[in-house]
Image 1 (cartoon, rainbow over the protein chains, first blue to last red):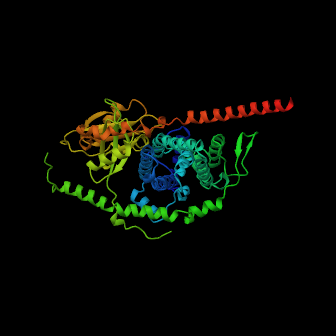
Image 2: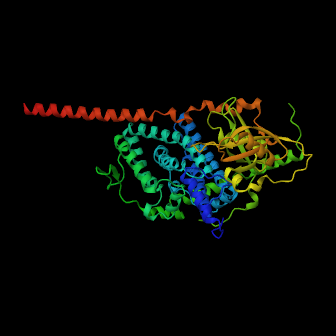
Image 3: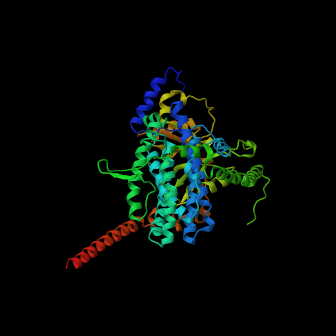
Length: 321
Length: 208
């Protein structure tokens, strides 16, 4: 599959024609090395984001205000764990092992969504994470469900079906906060202020600085650009935020009649890079939590492996009914 | 960030099992994804945790991935030599399940059960499958030895699959956010109108 392969050009042409016809590329089909590498990069980062994404909200499970909210949050965090598994397995079909990917995450080499390196200071943050962060994730994931690589696309369709609940449970809480007491309205506004910009950064670098975009678009890995998705998100969110009597922490925000867009102010990309490179408010805490969870789960992995081995060797006594 | 690398030997990349789900009685099994597990029993448990957090499962199958013979439509076409294999004449026939992917529509499921064939080897099973189930474009073939399938225990079906039914808070339909938002907006408009009326009345009073 190297470029030195004399059939490479013909292969590439057939591959691109399949994608243009809307066909999915499946494990076993021919694909350019760069397609494989880009997908491994994207899918593994996405998987890591789901796994690390369990932490900011997971911390609040024991402090949920009532049983209903506790069940909802437990289920949501459990879903994120499941989503991580779908994605690690989709990446595995490209020739990388889950072990290698976990290794990359735990050693700090791998990237994950920088939004999860911000702290959850109050219960209202869980509301905003559901509405903003999951809402933004759904935009991106709905696009990726159309992706040309079959296993990634299927994982995304399954994830999107489940994320609807994540977004709506958050939005429900935001609406209730916004119609509540002065203290509650203050709490939710504070959460909006802290999560708005990190959420906009989730869509990635502006189109003119995003190096991967061109090839990814041509090969149907991404079908819409970062800026396009970000603008659509802003346009949907701003009127609803305003309707709830809340404000957007952007003094430059205005409605442009001509384009029909809510034009937002400049995103602080320096902050983005600082957080991506490890210097966000919670990077160290998140990695420490992941490593601890991995260490603490070691006896379980050992026990099930020992049990399976005993069963195989026939050393396990039959259970008496 | 720390550069301490985790100790590989302590990690366990267990074998991969493909997971097949049946969503209602009589429906064909379809592949939903895979799990890692040290044995079939754990594979079924993991499959339930990963793929049955919501309703719509009546039965699960797990199959060790290395026992599945797969060929994409492209592979079948590109390499005519795939059929050539030496088989001793006295190999007894075995049963194989045939799964295929025939659609490019948006879906969370992969290959779907098409039927069963008897053959001496997976390659021969695929040849038969193409004859019998190749009447439309097939993008992916999976040949699964029937003996390698481990099915969820019928007696445990209740405890495996029923809990998902009582968790309607996991469904987006359990939240009335659209209605709630509309009500907030209507209240906002009503307040504005009320304010406008009061303003006009006050101005009326002042003008008198």
